[in-house]
Image (cartoon, rainbow, N blue to C red; front, side, top):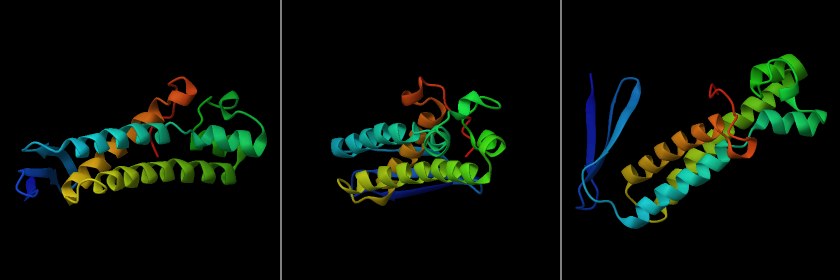
Length: 153
């Protein structure tokens, strides 16, 4: 069963989220949104993509072992290959880094919108956009020729 949550945004209309028991499924905007808010959504999206493009598997393997994880095992820079190749400590750092970059990107997107718009729904939309762009950065990182992870973490 779907439910719709809408709240007025300072007499401009509404921003809402449609969702069910499994979480949000869509975001809708029923009015014009101010340009500063749209600008912060866009800035959050770009920064989140760049943060998501950081590959912690490669960074951990290069820093700790002076080696590239992609030259071993499955050739993937993910946590499973790190676990099989370098052990639990490297795998743990990799998964913490990947989860952390998603959290940082999401919080950054939300924070940027609150700088120009105090509407909590607009900030939530900024968080969703940034989270999505961080996953895109993880899957197709600009730093590693658009060959990234599988997006599991």
